[in-house]
Image (cartoon, rainbow, N blue to C red; front, side):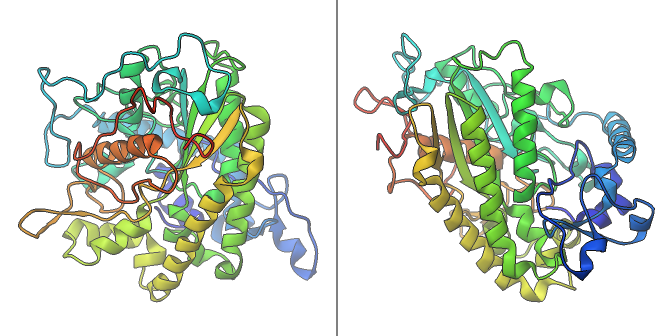
Length: 444
């Protein structure tokens, strides 16, 4: 949800954090081969004022692959973060969920929904059987700007509030998937618990990166596996792991318009990188259930276009989402939306591939974001409280609404899953003795 990487690295370097370079797996051929680069080759000085093409078609700055420069940007962002201070602990504002009083019980009966012994099949998992949670994605998963009140606070990742991997507070204050699962298994771990960047300890197993696209997922998946394996708490072959992957927003918001002939190949490459990621996880990550979630970014953006967006949104969106709102590229926004809709179908189709389903591993497409839009109040006026101040990222309330949607999808059978966002706690599913398991394609 940010400008293309060349512009970002040279102008907005404080947005940079961990390793953002992309894996290169192509081969050189043809007359333009001399202008293509990989992580091992390319001229940094030459690329300070221009771009080169990676061997996998991705046009980006060679600065991405420079460890010294990357460390410099990481340091700048660290200083900025400390000067600005934490924002995730705020407890007042229209964009925060309404706090649930202590007198109100958790909506579900949690008794009996952790197995006496760890199940041997992913298709027999109860909510309390998950020991570890993790996430891959972009700034919507790192909860960038979730508690922002002014636009410069959009630089802060409120990871403890993230819909699928945040664990700050409890479900009463911050409804997140981990805070729901902690009611069934208080020993759950891996969730982010405070404002942090990818390289900070509180991020734990949330390796989401701002600006990330589908092509970043193979590298980020390998980083996640390395991080989890190095954590002594993780019993790699016995603990059940819940991994949520939500990606694709940046592909069309701030990337497709900068790539050479991208409209001709982007869906093909997205499927390739998604398959590469899932095959790697299937091979290396035992006892894992993967939630595969489409990004709501394009849908939410188009729904906001139907109302009068605040001035802050009109100012920031052309910067953060230049392919849709930048004057140079926005004429093709309907084409980009069409390509995004195709990617959503690709995600669903990939999730059904038989090689991603066994007793030890399964992928489930969770479509609650598929037809997402902003809310309207009873008086018919739009309610933008689910959005952060930039109308691109989600607010803390938006993350809570998303957690509610993902949780419901996990308990809904295939072909009967909710595809829209609903008001917080308007519908909150619970496991039952008749249907105690998290739904997969094999137990629906």
